Image 1 (cartoon, rainbow, N blue to C red):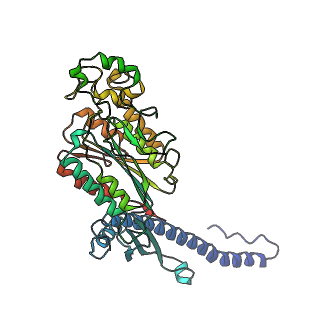
Image 2 (image 1 turned 60 degrees about the vertical axis):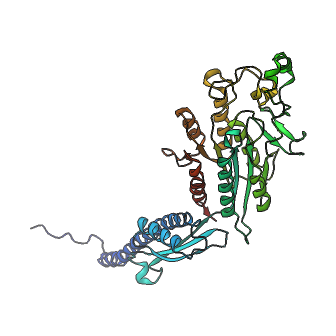
Image 3 (image 1 turned 180 degrees about the horizontal axis):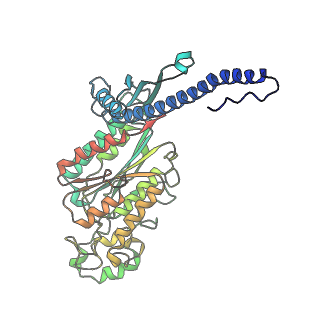
Amino acid sequence: MQRKQPCRFPDNSRCGATSILLALLVPVILGMVGLAVDMGNMYVTHTRLQAAVDAGALAGSLELPYDPDIDKGLVKQAVTDMIHTNMPAAVVQQVSPGTEVRSVVVKAKAEVKLLIMGFTGIADHWVSASAAAGFNKLEVVFVVDNSGSMKGTPINLVKEASIELTELLMPDGADPDTKVGLVPFRGKVKVGDDVDGLDGGCRNADGSVNNGINDEFMDDYYALSSRYRRSIDLDTCSDIPEIMPLSQDKDEIISAINQQTATGNASGTLISEGIKWGRNVLTPEEPYTQGGDKEDMRKIMIVLTDGDTEDGECGGSYRASYRPNNYWTNAYFGMGVDTAHCENGGVLNEEMLAEAELAKDAGVEIFSIRFGSSDNTDVSLMKEIASSKTGTDDHYFDAPSVYDIPDVFKEIGKQLGWRLLN
């Protein structure tokens, strides 16, 4: 049998002191380990709870268009379902209207399994989290095709849907931190006086004033027979509604929306110009300065068109058989360019994509709506300009019928509530 080794200290009392010290340290070490475990559990539980509450607030905000005063149970049900999906053990304590207009506040708690801190009374067994979400701090601009094919029922339904969305964002009796603007477009856009240092009127793609057919092409115009000249409208600007800058005056916004008729002399459809001027309206830099900082405001552009990018030079059902023609009054021909239209598969489509990228780089979120029947190229372009999450088309909408337009705007309205508020 192996013999027990004797204490090697000259004074055996030192061996006893070491044993006593170890006996005292073991509980301390175990307590520190327990505290570390408890603190880790508290952190993990709170982090998980906060994520669940954030998701709950966002889910509840999507029901605000249908339960604005949170008294129908729709918001509360959405909040509770989402929180319990993410954290079944969480206890929902409060679902109530927030101090922000059209917002919901959510509070919940969850129990933490504690080893030491709960036993000693150092910490509570519960952690809490709260979040608010809703329709606020928004800047929205409607970029709407006003070409002739939109006249009648299509433009009327777009106006009604735009007004309903404006009412949601800016309810009566409230002062939300929200602004709305409007960019009607055809083959060009029309700006008001004192906007960019030039006289009010339509603009070319380079920003210069559009005076119809460029002077360089007037000899070609006069060379046409009188029959063709009578088919060309030199003034294709007067009937385009002016761009309305971002505003908090709901009556002014609704009045501007209602001015759209999609009637008057045609000049084609240049979606790129609508997007460009939509960006100009939303960003705080000149020519429009009503926009806020992109870090403070969620900037939304809603682009709706029923047609291809069209200038009558690239084929299609509206192609003109003679040159010049009405399309030569658009934003590109108007500045003297008659070669940047059909090369490389359609330079105007490239311009559309380029303008969308510039808008996104400036912090603008684009929702695109393709109304009517369309081919794969047009659908692809509208999907590409949209700010959809990777792998989804959540910012692109197809409206085959005019009667789909109101539902599309409602779906966009729901997504505008998907924002956590400070």
